[in-house]
Image (cartoon, rainbow, N blue to C red):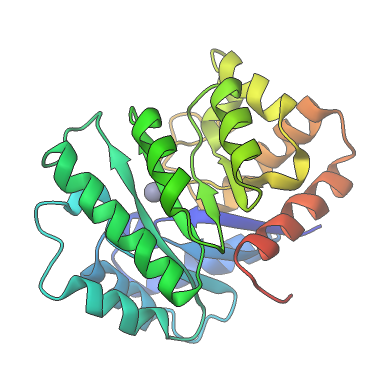
Length: 259
Ligand SMILES: [Zn+2]
């Protein structure tokens, strides 16, 4: 059995380069054989990328998250393009819209998001999409701008109706479930995980956030991913091994990775 954590903020788990390597080591022992490192900005990307340059099991997304909308940095578009050419960089992101925390204003968030969707299209890469309280705008924008390589709605938080709509419109879009699907009050999310086509499902920890209920109170880590996978396999009533294989293969396809 192998797992692929599709969303890990390695730089936020720990700034210490040695500690980051230890987390990856420990994750491998728990069969998390691959993970996608996510950074909110390009400074973090450079730090994490350079530290983990020899870790072939760690893939990277490069982009500017909505939290940085007022300060994406000088020449950020050019810098994303340069970094996207580096080894093991497989996606643009995370990018998207976050109206919950009201970063900047809506218009500047939308601009930042659309520009990165265009970069992804231009570079032929998938996108990692963040959505918080912005479902309608996300849906509208993806109608026109989802790149050909598609992408993933990470840490999914909408209902089944939204998932059904967006998945039917885009056959290259995936939905990623994080530890919050295991919460006792997460009925709506569980309904989506139960109903959705399994070939479009991936999983993540969103470490150090969103720890699953099995590790309640702890700081999340990629090596806690198996608890979420086990929960979902049980929910879908599928053999754990078989379920893990499907999810792992989906993730390779999403990020265009050869195992
Ligand atoms: Zn994230």
